[in-house]
Amino acid sequence: MQKEIEITLLPNQIEQFEVIKQKLADGLKLSENRIKDYEILKRSIDARSRKVIFRLQVRAYIDEERILEIHRVNYKNVSDAKPVLIIGAGPAGLFAALQCIENGLKPIIIERGKDVKQRRRDLAAINKQGLVNTESNYCYGEGGAGTYSDGKLYTRSNKRGDINKVLQVFVDHGAEQDILIDARPHIGTNKLPQIITSIKDTILNAGGEVMFDSQMTDILIEFGQVKGIEINFKDQLSANHIILATGHSARDVYELLNKKNILIEAKPFALGVRIEHPQEIIDSAQYHCDIRSEFLPPAYYSLVEQVGARGVFSFCMCPGGIIAPCATGEKEIVVNGWSPSKRNNPYANSGTVVQVTLDDVQGYDPLRMLNFQSEIERLAFEAGGGNLVAPAQRMMDFVNNKLSIDLPKNSYLPGTKSVMLDNILPDFVSESLKAALPLFGKKIRGYYTNEAILVGVESRTSSPVRIPRNKETFQHPQISGLYPCAEGAGYAGGIVSAAIDGINCANAILAGS
Image (cartoon, rainbow, N blue to C red):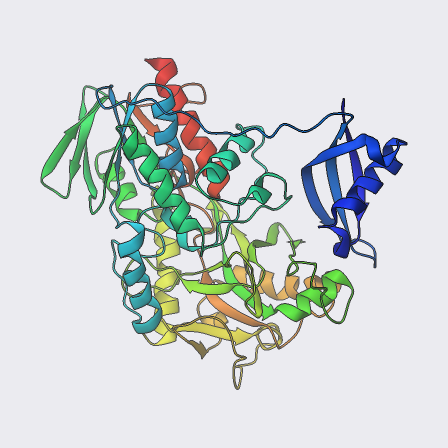
């Protein structure tokens, strides 16, 4: 017999098998010797009161042994099947490819960047020398932006598809089983690259193809039907189905679609800074302690405030993390954040951004929000003075309109320069942040402090362009066989939601075949 029950544990009890069995027995009003085993289904931290606890949803095995299931999908060989071109090897592209294989279709992934191993050298050049390879960086390459920017798997996209299926694929390819049960699952940028490589190997072993250093430079269309693509301005590949999973930073793709008069639309996005605190400040506030228990992970936060008609919110929070330079072009500054699996760096960072609406950028050009985004990134580069040095300011100095005399130590490797961020950010963004930050300080003790640094700019929270598609068929309304997908099309954000969207696009191709 099996029964599910919620139990609570103190942090130091989380790994104690006998304590958990006793809690189950007490909760189920059974003798402890009847509890033969248990399975943790969900696990979360509850820090709402001064005594921090873990909440566990547990399946108890009563008077029977638990039979461990070995999960592994047996992907059939699709070498000779109908091809589907997938543009982009990020989570949307990789999971679309796996689903194509399940559906008996042959995926051919076209990736402008390099594989994981070669990509590392280009990231080192970004961090140490301030040199951006415009085809291989934190955004472009095997695994997409997520490979080297954290591996956070939290999502609210449970209505869009099977989250557990996505998480199980990661586990099947080397991720820890914990991601199946944690409320905020996380892999870590030190582990994700090997997992991405393993997923690629599964695709190749099943007869799929992956082409690196291959930029899509044209889409071939005849009478409203896709016929293939051009690669690197010379080679051509033929197919009647294309999944466009290029991510939100492939600006040349938006420009290509616009040039070919393929319908695209300007889309709202968010703009701001990345804010970094000493992790101990966040730990102390969230866990109500002076020193975080060794049994608790570095603390997380999520903040939102309405300032007038605009939302101001934290985004992509990285406990024990690093601020990373994520520019994809020359003479621009873009920052993001990531954490290793142990989240053991001394800083906590989070994007803190303000909503930018279509009314903020006048005109009818579908690329106007993208151009606005680009302009802010160029201003940030100029303010930093080159070599990816980022403009920065202490938090209270920013709110009080003071140039910081010096800057606190921080995790951004190319370096930071003290500037007035008001000279970079639009007035409505600056004023909204200045109103929200002290209010955030009332929600988290110690948050509003000059020990925190604001690093500019956090501008790639989501795509500033939407590529329309039909809700039922997932196809572009003008072009048959073209499937705009995930973040780059303006429909999903984050690893898991992008993966789900990739799966949905692959299933839409099967349904329409």
